[in-house]
Image (tube, rainbow, N blue to C red):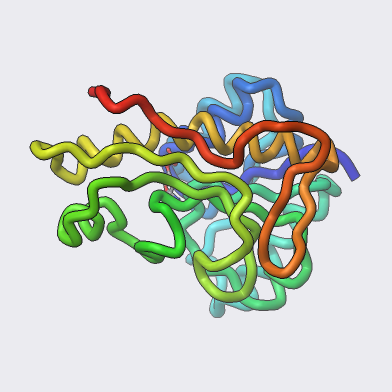
Length: 209
Ligand code: GRF
């Protein structure tokens, strides 16, 4: 087993940050042929594959085809990066302990969609992103690293999303590097990083665009 398979559905900027960090991406798999990130991957000579969810009668059938595409690359790690399909329990179980996701909030706050609007509506003053191991419960797995950003008075969801996204691009490659170096241990639902003193938290600067 070697390398990472990255699953995307759209823009693919997190996948791009992983490729640009020099991490060993064995393939990028998308559930839509029009996922913009595919073009970047192809341009970098990274193998790509499309498993279109609309071609399958059920979530289970789609997940089986997806798992076949993933397994063809025998990856050590599967990284969800803006992959917008909820995965079935058998898929999650198959990659238990080697399936990561990035979520645009400080989990466990704001699971699910529209996290930036939800953060603004809640009036929180700090927001961010989380890389976590995927478990059957959506957006709930053990947390590897988080990035915190300020919520500024004149923010709208787009401005806040952009500030968070810039930090996503910092923390996802870092989490993957730790994983591939065999430095992550999950115990009792929490993650520690062995053999170093790097923080599992990144604070974005207070004054940002
Ligand atoms: C990111 O905000 C990620 O956290 C969320 O979906 C978005 C995907 O963006 N899961 P991209 O496709 O990586 O640019």
